[in-house]
Amino acid sequence: MDTQTVINRPVIAVTGSSGKTTTKEMIASILQRRWKTFKSIENGNDVWFTSQYVNQIDSSYDMVVLEYGMTHLGNIAQHCRLIQPNIGIITNVGTAHIGNFENGLSGIVSAKSELIKGMNPEGILLLNADDFNSTLLASKGFTGEKITIGILNKADYQAYEVQYFDRGMLFQVILDGVSSEFYILSLGRHNVLYALFAVTVSHLLGMSIVEIKEGLKTYYKSYGRLQIYYLKNDITLIDDSFNAKACAMKAGIDVLSDIGKGTNIAVLGRINDLEEYSLQIHKEVGYYLADKNIDYLFTISEEAEQIGKGAIESGFSKNKVIHFSSLGQLNNILLGKLHPKTTLLFKGYTGFPDEEKTLDSFRMNETISQLINYYKP
Image (cartoon, rainbow, N blue to C red; front, side, top):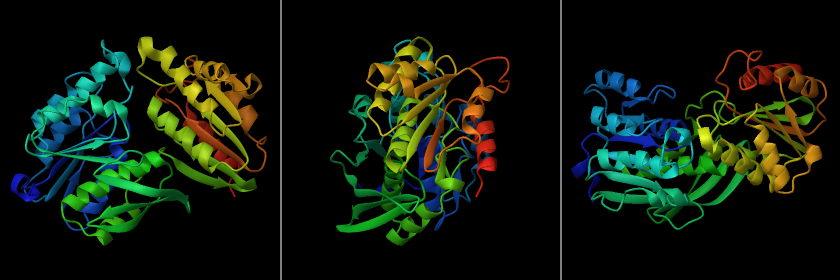
């Protein structure tokens, strides 16, 4: 397909259970090196934000990069009616907000499929070949161009020789028959997948390899998304506390397991919007953690306690699982008592401001700030 015959001005919409903001920022960072590019502000991805973007996107913009969030069926369809994309990206299909869907995962698949049905039918659709749930999307009837990206599974655009390097990730991609090396200042194989979406879109739109490389090096990283702090006594703190979804929590656990060189501690809070699926999904995170290079699991909030129970059921030592009922209890364990060469991951929902009123209100950012100040180099 000749991309330009279908797409006069690229309008790129990114949705998915995780990685929307990161993928959007990576794409915009590359495209704006050559073109005037409009992008969603921060993680402003609900329908109200899109309704505001309608009046902000004028003819002066060459490129438009938006993220389409959803919490209920019909949200993404509303996005598409407001601003119809001609390039659609679905990063993955997970259990985020599953409590809002009567049909569980199948309801989420239907909701994500709204992007496919609502975008330009002759446009370009990008899907994650490594994500099994993405095979359930309603993409068979899409008449435009379908492109897959992946690391583990065969894909149209594939990353290989993926490795941790100098506080970021290195990976190779074959473009136009030539292998090119890319670097991102973010940790985790999941971030390589998001970068691969950005590489693919940019390449399709005619960006040079040099432009793509430079754009990936300088994309905007939102607060609390796998930010790494290197502190005194060789203590490393991974702040991934912005929000918590099961797939993102597992990705954070992977990073902790991969980069930790001494004692590895996962500090995990609750996952939001799960309702009747809460017990099952929190336990599944525990099952996942049990097989990783993790030494201790600290949980806080009633729901997150199930992560510890799941880990123990999968063989993780019950003596290395500690549940805390308050922020103060956790601080007493961490402040001034961390051994050298300790790596900590903080991941959890931080949506409630008053820690004294409810166990669900764990404000991880408060503890993170105290730790950074206490152990600052």
